[in-house]
Image (cartoon, rainbow, N blue to C red; front, side):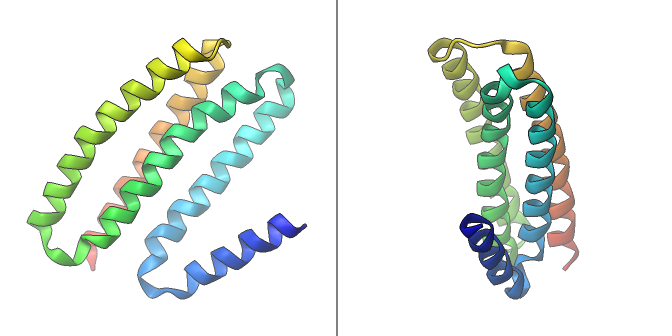
Length: 138
């Protein structure tokens, strides 16, 4: 109960900030993905860690990307594009290192990991595109 109260309190603090509507949209998408991962991990009890490891990488990178998109949104379109290109290069390197590290360090079933990773990667990048469209519209 304590954890849910703290999450609710943090979400209400973020919601009160006028510039964070885009972040709230992303947070709701992450909560949705965690719910879907919870449902699938309930059906496949022996694949819990694979499902949540596949979800963790894109969620972490997405939060950082959305944070920088919101932070640099007032500096002009050229500056925002420079940040997005740099972020793309950093994400490209991080995802490669993340997948190689997971496959070499941790022995597990790769199919649930890749399914979870791919699904969360696609959904969260689509949400990043929606957030970018909202930022450019203001």
